Length: 297
Image (cartoon, rainbow, N blue to C red):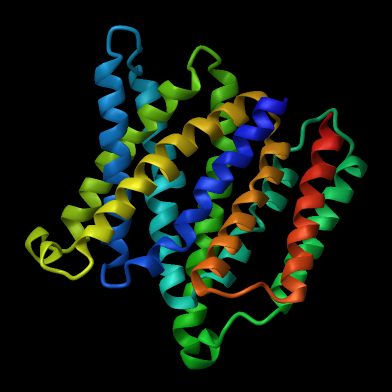
């Protein structure tokens, strides 16, 4: 169980980077950033599969189809919607909405033997932390452009639905297929995601010649490489490890770590400390995770 918990927390730390990534390269479109990140993920996954071809198994047609469907839910579709939402509504409010994923995953993925009463402390602490965060100042994005702001809220809500479905379906798939290890599944998802990202860029991305002449190209390439390797390939392996060892409800609670790290990175990027209410909310998030872990022991 400890291995699964640590893997889930590490995945959250890597995922948190993607919430500030769009602000690091403002001169590049949402489609370019999404396609670049997941093309890097696909390249890494394909290389790992080629290097270990003699010892790694290839997916069956049914497994490949499952990887394609889940790659859209949990990667290209989810992240494109999230990047568009951050563009319209800023970083913090979309982060908080995504932060409700643990509540939905815990409610939808509760093991049958676990009593609802055991989940109440963790759920209540997480909900209280979210309420505090939502009540604290989040900049003036809504006041400056309300139409764009609310469009961003709608987009991040759809992205929330996508990733909630991915978390539950991915966990269920891995438990039904114990013969597939975490690295193989991450690689299969990566190849499917990379193919989808390439198609996305060909249909809606900027021309390669245009991207090559933009200021900040080196930073864009480095960010895509880092988020493709760390926040996609490595984080997916870590999350698969957690999904195989923990129940869906506990995995859902561990997603709170993504929100915590995303807020930490956002505060660091802005060069400011969290407001008192935000600091208290982070403490509540942390205690909520610990309470949920205890409930599952």
